[in-house]
Amino acid sequence: MNDKKQYLTVEDYFNDQPEQVKNALIMLKDCILEVVPDAQELLNYNIPAYSLVKDGKRDKQIMMAGYKKHVGLYPHPTTMEHFDKELSSYKKGKGSVQFPIDQPLPKELIVRMVKYRMELLKS
Image (cartoon, rainbow, N blue to C red; front, side, top):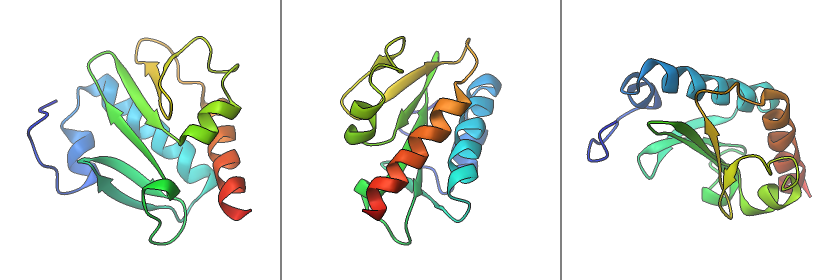
């Protein structure tokens, strides 16, 4: 996990992570693609991002990042606010949540968060 390294693809980013972190990131990606199969994969701020609408800018993307002890998911402040109670056992910021890599990912919750984000984008 070299903070100074510039990645060319999301795959490069994933492959540069320790195995457990890489697996958690792939699971996050799978949750996003379950809801939005045609999400555009890109790098934003040198971390993986998934545009939920064609050519969507930052506010229409869900981003993620790998760290030593957790993976970060950046779904958007409105999504974080909506799921605040369900995310109460996780460390969170205004627009982000940290999922420890030594615990199973709450996949069903993540899928619901992506669905909620999509609903907001459609309205």
